[in-house]
Amino acid sequence: MGMVAALLIWTGLVLATLLPLTFAATSEYLAWRDPIYITAGLAGVVALCLLLVQPLLARGWLPGLRLPQGRVVHRIVGVFLVAAVVIHVGGLWITSPPDIIDALLLRSPTPFSIWGVIAMWALFAAALLSLLGRRLSPRSWRLGHTSLVSIVVLGSAIHAILIEGTMDTTSKAVLCGLTVTATVAAVARSWLRARSRASGKE
Image 1 (cartoon, one colour):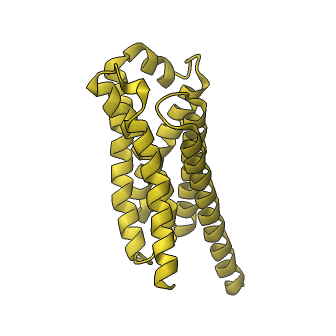
Image 2 (tube, rainbow, N blue to C red):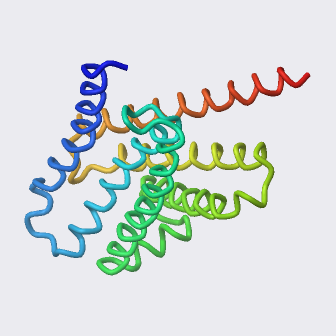
C-alpha cells in the first residue's frame, strides 16, 4: 500500500471519529449538565468510535498495523472499549438510578435504552469469551466472538441513532454506517477464510 493511500485511510478514520466527538463535546445539550453526566455521555461516544476501530484492527486493515500487530492492539482497544462502556453506564447510574434500573431490567419506555443494554451485555460476553479463548476450539471461539460483536455493533448503532442528544445527526449516522460496514466486511472475510480452509482440508 502506498503512502498516499495509507494517509487517506488514517485521515478518514481520524475524521470519522474526531468529528462526532468534537460535535458532542461542544453540544448545547451539555451547557447545563453536571460533570458526571457529561463524562458519561462522552464515554458513550468514545465507545462508539472504538467500535469502528476494532474490526479494522482485527483484520489488519490499518496501514502500519498489519497482522499480528493489529490483533494485539485490538485486544488493548477492547479493554478501553469495555472501560468506556462501564464509565458510560456508571455515570448515568449516578445521575439517574431509576432510569438505569429500568433499562437493565428491559422495562424502559425508551427503545434506545433497550438496545444499549443488549449491546452492553453482548460486549461483556465477548470480552469474557476473549479471556476464555484458549479453552475453546478456534471454530467455536470464532463463531461465538463474531456473533457477539455483531450484536454489539448493531445494538450500539441503533442505540445511538435513536438518541436525540449531544451527537450531531450527520456525523453520528456516518460513524454508525462505517462501523456496521466495517464489521460486516470483517465478519464476512473471517467466514470466507474459514470456509476456504475447510474446503482445502476436504
